[in-house]
Length: 66
Image (tube, rainbow, N blue to C red):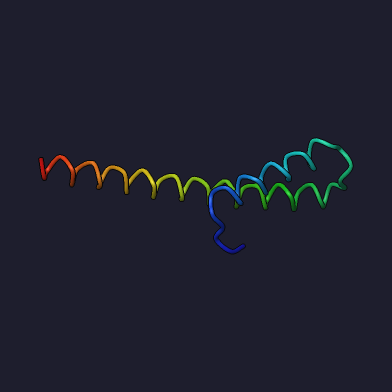
């Protein structure tokens, strides 16, 4: 799966959750969607961690220049 931006990943994750909750997928399709969802969660977490690091760096740089 390619790296997507946070909003796209979240939107795709919400779609997968809706599909899983519908109960209309086969077991195999449910498992595949679940795997895709895990990948999207990992991507979202990585994007959040990177954003937190950037904010921390910017805050440190700002405080160092005061």
